[in-house]
Length: 409
Image (cartoon, rainbow, N blue to C red; front, side):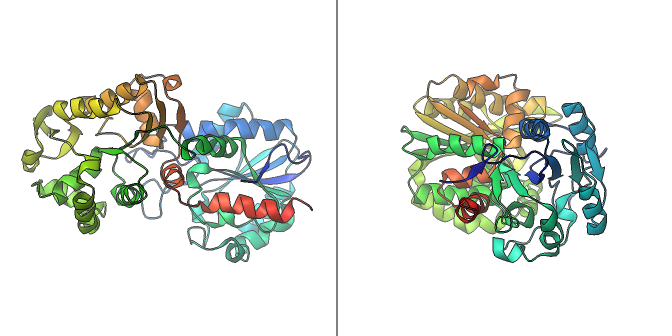
């Protein structure tokens, strides 16, 4: 794998366009940012660029169109300013004329954060780098940009304008976060020690089902442990009854669309998937554990004690553990037990352990477990899992394309 790094060029006085991932959890009621992990992850690259006296144009996304967390990056700019100890300029809106004027005014070492990149037309379209290079956004900014720096590994699985659009127009460089992720991931994908155990949970069930299918078809996992809403879908596909509220949630999360695919996975890989034998539901505000066949009495918000014991036994056999997603609603104390116990078990093994995804890392922190006890932590979710399952990531391909094009320039 060949790509440029921050060591490849003299950046003093150069204008660099930097894509980071600062997509943060937002409180639905107050609109306030709840955790700053991803914003903090951009700090090493930002500090280095400031020290190298580059002119930094920074961009990131927040939320999905139509969702409550699809908001401006004004808060992010203030948080970033506090973390860096210097003012980060912020330009609200999507007026490209104002943006070009703002870029031209930048001084060495200054940072200008643009507004939510998903506010811009065409950003979320999945297209090839050559097509995105013709977009209004790239066409307007490329005369002002000397280098494009991608430090957004959590968004590396997307072929969006801000991820791949500049790769054929200016040298594309891996930021320190991106560089660290790619070098660490190479250690996981090349001959991992077996048995390899995947621990999958969370609520992004559509993505997780696709991932499970790839992992099992490619024989990458010796065993898959499931929790969260993903396990509810698998139990439902297996014929277990669920409550009307759970059914509605699965439908909202587009899980029901994957039911037939899940049935095939369960039929073909019966011995490779560990399912919950009991779950925790809420009754009168308290945790109540019931057998998995009794989920119709309430929504499963955590795995049960017997399941925790079963899963820990499997984890103790692992030589490599790849984890993404909590086992339940870890944010609620009554339903944090499964997530905490499984994470504790992972950190007590002497195998290579990896944890990925912002929610999973937040759950680790909430459990009071030191990050130092995990071999490798990635804030990326889907990008991390796609990479370890053998998929090509658009951002990585773009880095390689740009390296081949500009290395002799």
